[in-house]
Length: 129
Image (cartoon, rainbow, N blue to C red):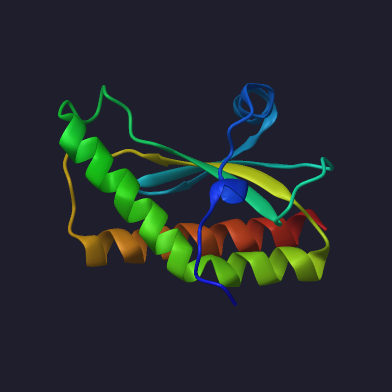
């Protein structure tokens, strides 16, 4: 399994993002909210993701950028779990990771919280069958 996280994994289409936030399902794994939606559109990989850290929560750009960098790194390292499950279920999803805390938390704690969120996402996808 590759440990890259290129452009093909990033959700950039405005139409897909709008559809995700208007029609998608919400999953809470404090301090992370996951918005996800199954899609039939042609994609290079099993999922595409967008990261969000609201300015309302974190005032400083360097804090928001730090959290998004951590999200990208954690997902890059652990994407195989989610990708293998989606391939096995023959599904493709778009999802958003939204950070809900007002302050930065250490990398190890953020990693644990994001892995919990991914685990909840996988179990939610299993339940949709």
